[in-house]
Length: 239
Image (cartoon, rainbow, N blue to C red; front, side, top):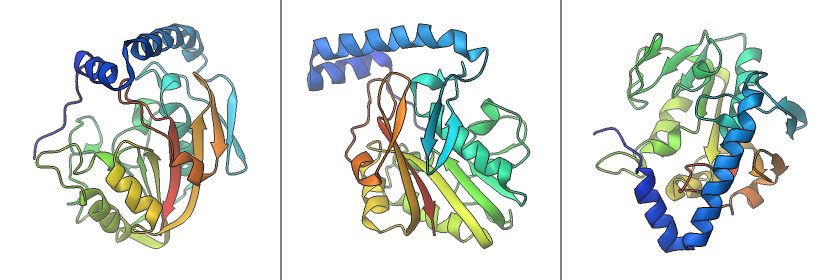
């Protein structure tokens, strides 16, 4: 299998124009540009404002790497980083995300990204790493099998099964999932093919604002393929 290369902006604009019309695309790109400029000053501080999820308050993440304030990274990273910080045992992160925003000490596996401390292993081939008290994946598993050739829609479900087997007794597997990117995995997570113990959700409510909603409401959101950003994210603890 080869790694996935996202469509270029020109191709994405063309598809969006055919689907939604030129006026919609022009407005979306203008909002993105304005939001990009508006958020840059706040990257010095690292955050601006707060959001709530599951009874806790978190600061939004404003970071220049991938302009987090314009994507789901603004809320995913703070939530998962707090889980990692609170876990005294062994932690595994599938997909290298957290280290882009702060130095980390846990184990990280990423099939394609190279860097210090990153194990270049396929999520379906993690034998020998032992068991973990917490396994996290930030907007990663929806790409497994889906953005590879040949496409294997069930590969992400197989990955979840493999990761569950790596949990220590009382261990937790937590993932963030951008709704609408991978409809096959959406259906598995929503319909019970993958057993979910706890689910919470956030939905975009403005350029840089997110609000907590029910998972049922979040599952109805469309993914923004023009800008590669989610309009809703579900936070799932898989049993």
